[in-house]
Length: 472
Image (cartoon, rainbow, N blue to C red):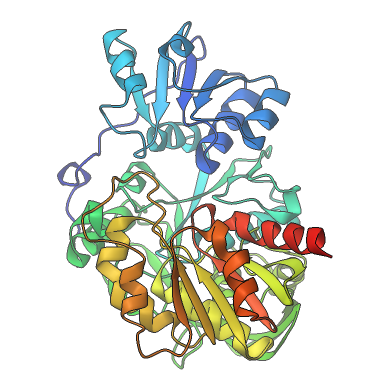
């Protein structure tokens, strides 16, 4: 596949040079990606301030580091700023961006700042529709365990980092997720890329699957000829993209014919054992992570380590000590007669993989409370969401979590439930906060309950546990 030049992809332009004398104000500094970037700049001597819609534990943590953060989007917060940093979630007509324009403040997209900070480093980027956060966190863990001391930014709370998502190292290595959602990954210049998969998503920005794949191809074209692409050959999209790169490539997967092959030998609660095969050698590792998808994520990290000359035994030992990322099959405790887990799955493929793992490891019944994320994604994937959720014994779907979007007429979480009319237990609940009363009236309990989605559904598990304790 031929890749277009980056200039043909909307929203790309050369990154700005960061100036030590400037103060950078982050809009939406409480976001997981923005907070890590702001912390990196602060810890390396840049002047950083920030604001977000409301106070949060993240803002309080940043304030504890000495960063001037404010709740609310008052334009007075821009006082003293020399530039603003924003994400695609902050629209051009946002009051703070308009105020920055009036003040003639340079406006930098988050990806421009990330590109500038990583430019002096040897950047390893993790790309793909699914698995980026887990693979990025694992890659940083493995590189650190092998003595390479990387700096890494992860799009989730890393359990090994006391819930943080930034690791600041002293070496020339940098590790980061490459975000395809808005095409901003095209600003990065990685030495190597781990490509977990390439499926349709974020079609609100890319328009269609072909344009999305075109953007992936343009990103992979940024790898220099002496670099390397490690890709999952189990995924057709990743395999197609690998065929068009100019650099060295290394395949991994579970099927025949891959260069690094993984076999899951055993899977039970808190333990998965897998074997790895490469060039006639066979190694084994045991991980607390579960699911075939996580076996592949860890194998991709292993393969990238091999591509950089790291010894296989060291890589396997490092994989075994990686504990994962919050909100990925995360056990929360017991409540309402359920063993409650929280998971970030918000795409049909992710839902299928998560439910497959829970059925294999814990067995039925599995109850899911799913909060769709984005109206555009719900519109594109309503049928696929329904089919992915169907294996669950009991399904509850909430209203859509809008995130950065305005409501779309006729689009609702109820669309998914309507497509499950033949399911014996599929229910629409407009607000997940009503779930304790609904499940209490129904008298349903037993087995595993998974709160699932990329929005604020993560608050349901703790609510159920607190509510149950208050009733007993």
